[in-house]
Image (tube, rainbow, N blue to C red):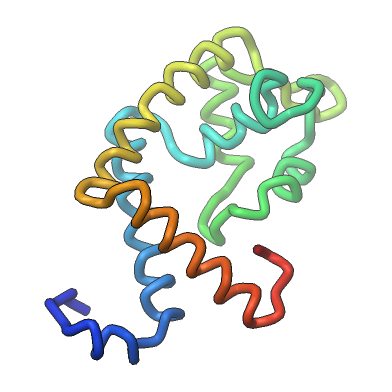
Length: 154
């Protein structure tokens, strides 16, 4: 669907579920394309983040792929963590012990930090022309819609 100018009255009648889904798909596709241009995938970044004691992992303890999959509720159906982990193992960013636990290597931590520094550029492109107040208002509206449906997500 092509986005065209519509009146506020028309926008008010359109289904939020359609637009949130369209926004999700567009934002994920854009983010992943930007990351691919930089030489990594979003799941690879998530693996590094979830294994780093300086990021999501509370203690930096190794994890199995199934444990990582369970920790990453945001994975998409097409994300194959085993394949992504193999790439990071080949790069030397991760290691795997005899029990099948993945561990972040020093080079993986350095890569995580390098990858992280690109996040503001990607965010800035996505937020172009949107001031923070409007962005916050949009998120508050979405959170209220989530609460209105009885969900505990927001």
